[in-house]
Length: 236
Figure 1 (spheres, helix red, strand yellow):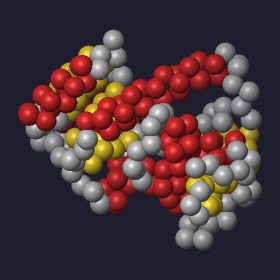
Figure 2: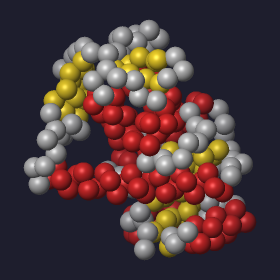
Figure 3: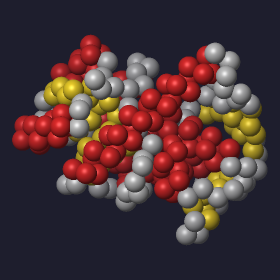
Figure 4: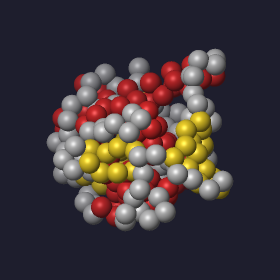
């Protein structure tokens, strides 16, 4: 059974979410503060963490940063009452996989949970294929950027660039299209595993991060381009 760890200090919200997730067939465990939540992630190795940012003890940002610094790759869905773009960007930079802003619809949250779990399963299968020599991965280049899909590493001008897992997956998705346009929902489906269209700025935020890290001038990108009303494409 798929295991979900819900780290949420609002008792009523945690209870309601846990019942809804259990009705979908997930085994749910609750942690009411960051310290307990961090300990449970380490001890239980859940398949997904649903993480509130405003927690007593260790806050959600610190918890997420700690997990990623330890090399923990468990998918993390952030629950946040903060609607500001900067807060979402900061969460993604720390390694969050997706977010839902409070108040949220239950159907939307369940779709995001399913999407992250689907993507995690696909990623694990892909890693297994690569380990057995079946990835067929090659080195890609654009501008002064080199992307090694096999080792999941990126360099710019010969210097390593640290990308989050989702940033790297998004970059690969654009590279594979050889200059063709990719729509936002198309990218949400491929990179995040979404099966239905949802209103989210996730793709745009990740594109902005890729430009910040890989473009000489992120405000006037030469490679990661916006195609008005269509999506994004990568120009070599």
